[in-house]
Every structure is written in structure tokens, then in C-alpha cells.
Image (cartoon, rainbow, N blue to C red):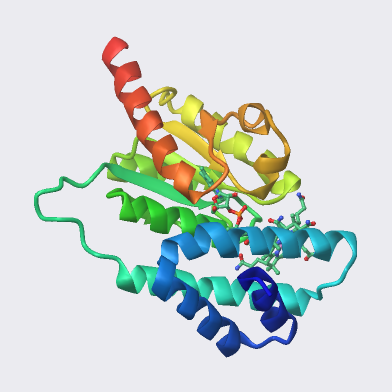
Length: 223
Ligand code: B12
């Protein structure tokens, strides 16, 4: 039995401690960050697909899967080593789930990976109105806002963040990163909602934020 099959079995039985023990054992050998990217992320996608297509998972089981992932995220946060004193922190960035979206896990993973990469992350949480993203970015001097949306309906609300950035004359200065399950399955949706770029997972998010930060600096220099 693979680790993914064993994990799914524990989730079906709502055995959260059992799932945690299994994952801790794997992480001892391979690390928690690999656990997230290689085991949990694909497992959640698979559970989500089955939940939708064949209802072989109940909402309660999906909830257990989310809780187990949260447990792992909390461990990563606890274990995170502070950046070496000689390494300058990267700039402040703002992240959150768009209005009406409550799928926190992906966003929290992105936040965890960005912090590990040295960014100062201001996480506004779930269900964040467009103006709040831009208010925060202006208050902390962020050049990148990362908006997470898991569903087609909520992804469309991201256009309001784009409008808010443009209305305040911050086009180019503030770059808009977008991501979430729906962007993985709908190529081109990122541009459609006004995003400057997307990444399929938390590992890719760190590179994307680097690229968008530099893009903002360049645009400001030529303005
Ligand atoms: C867990 C889950 C839930 C949990 C959420 C718990 C929590 N605390 O987060 C609960 C049970 C609450 C839930 C509720 C609902 N859900 Co739900 N859910 C899921 C599920 C199974 C997994 C989502 C998840 O956490 N994935 C794991 C994370 C790690 O992946 P991720 O979110 O994609 O994030 C990664 C990348 O996308 C990327 N990323 C994420 N954000 C960002 C941001 C930036 C800037 C960047 C660069 C990258 C990035 O990096 C992340 C890490 O690698 C998905 C299935 C799926 N295929 O995703 C359905 C899914 C998203 N849910 C769905 C639905 C329909 C719902 C409900 C409407 C169900 C209902 N009838 O009530 C509600 C809506 C709630 C709401 N308004 O938000 C649908 C959406 C369909 C659609 N495309 O429109 C999906 C796709 C299931 C399906 N196959 O039908 N859900």
C-alpha cells in the first residue's frame, strides 16, 4: 500500500491521529515541505475529484482531510527556522482569499512557502473584499498582492481587485498574483480576471512573487 492509499484509508475512517502519525513518520525521513507538495497536495486534489464525480467521499471526510493538512501546516510553521541574520528579508507582500471564498488551505500553504523563502507575508485570511487587499498593500508598501480563489464563481470576484488597483493609479506598481484549484484547470483564467501571473502550487508561488516584484520595480523605474 502506498503512503497516499494509507492516508486516504485513515481519512475515510476519520482517523485524524492515525493520519498524523503516518504523515509524521514519512516527514521524519523526507521533510514536511516535501510531504505537503508530494503527498498532501495531490491527495486533496484526488479526494476533491472523487467527491465531485462519484461522491465516494462525504463532506465530513473532506473536512477531515482539510484538518489533517492544517495539522501539517501548523507543524511547518512551528519548525520553520528563522532566516539567517545576514540574509535580508524580501519585501512585504499581501495574500488572502477573495470575497466569498473559504478554501484556506492552499493560501496558507502559499504563505508558509513564501515565509520560508524570506518574504514578509501579511495574510488577510478568507473572504477578503477587493479594497481591503489594496488598502493593506499600500499601508505596508507591498508590490505584490496574491489572491487565492478555488471556485469559478469566486475567481471572477478578482476582477474587482484589478479594478481597485487601476482606479488608484497603481497599475504596474502593484502586481496581482492569482492562484487556486480553478486556475489549474482553466488556462487563461488568470489573465481574464486581470492577474499578472499565476503558479500551480506553493513552490511555484515563491518564484512568481520574485518575478512580479522585479517587474514592479522595472515598471516604476521607466514610469
Ligand atoms: C478541502 C476542500 C473544501 C473544504 C475547505 C477547507 C479549508 N479549510 O480550506 C470545505 C469542505 C470547507 C470546502 C467547501 C466548499 N467547496 Co471545496 N474543495 C476542497 C478540495 C477537496 C481541496 C481544496 C484544497 O484545499 N486543496 C489543497 C490545496 C493545497 O490546493 P489548492 O487550494 O489548489 O492550492 C494550491 C494551488 O492552487 C496554489 N495556490 C492556491 N492559492 C494560490 C494563490 C496564489 C497567488 C498562487 C500563486 C498559488 C495559489 O498553491 C496551493 C498549494 O500548492 C477541492 C478539490 C480540488 N480539486 O481542489 C474542493 C473544491 C475547490 N470545492 C468545491 C466546492 C464546490 C465547494 C463548496 C461550494 C461545496 C458546498 N456545496 O458547500 C464549498 C464552498 C465554500 C466556499 N464558499 O469557499 C469545488 C469547486 C468547483 C469549482 N471549480 O467551481 C472543488 C474543486 C471540488 C470539486 N471537484 O467540485 N471545500
